[in-house]
Length: 321
Ligand SMILES: Nc1ncnc2c1ncn2[C@@H]1O[C@H](COP(=O)(O)OP(=O)(O)OP(=O)(O)O)[C@@H](O)[C@H]1O
Ligand SMILES: [Mg+2]
Image (cartoon, rainbow, N blue to C red):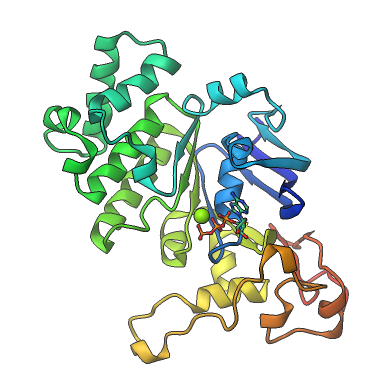
């Protein structure tokens, strides 16, 4: 059986600016792939590309393909893209408030998805909505269905957005920072709900986050983006045990640890370069402690690692020395 989602050397531009380059990864059914990287690394752009929303922000695919269940979806018509999104591909957008209509009752907003994508009657759609809400452990589902978005807490709204993403019976869910705005306890509940859905239903989940703690806890594989390019892609355990890319290592170093004082917490020095002004060579080299001469001049291409996964670093196994 082919992978459910397979990005092949995907490149994306908005106007003249190249924002994603040569991004490849694979997501199997029943798996969670974490897509990580600092702000501005291209995570949301990847999500918008997979869900067919890129044209809405004036972007276009300049190279590569997106295979979904073996079919190239990178050049579908607008009609077919809309059919796929909300149907076989559910999307949890970065900001739940933009996904919810403030003047429509919650239940109706979920109902419409299954009416549209599964052709359910009004009555069957509502039954499905209430069932989904129960699965997402939303108490008093009937009352919540009659409420408006502003009457709900942030955590509840995020569950509603997930219910909307599930209502069309998707095979793939793309969740862009589904827990970022929530407090730690609610965050853990939402991640738990998503993981259970994946394991029980054989869904595939592309989980976008900048939280490496969430990645370690929930993901099977990890794709690390830096400045629009893939730095590393691997199974979660080896990635945390022996990161192949200095950027991955730095991200792992940023996870807060209980055994360290707050003063010892550290981010990565410097910042992600602007897309209009990427440095020559490896885009990470100005921030890299291990940079060599070649890193300043030659862009490292993504190359397979011996065991599993891939890395784009001159220092790594198989690269030039
Ligand atoms: N509509 C747009 N027009 C022009 N540039 C854009 C647009 N959307 C995103 N970008 C640029 O694309 C790059 C990647 O942005 P993206 O939103 O994908 O980052 P991200 O990894 O999701 O960051 P965050 O963690 O802040 O959500 C950034 O340099 C950003 O400035
Ligand atoms: Mg984003």
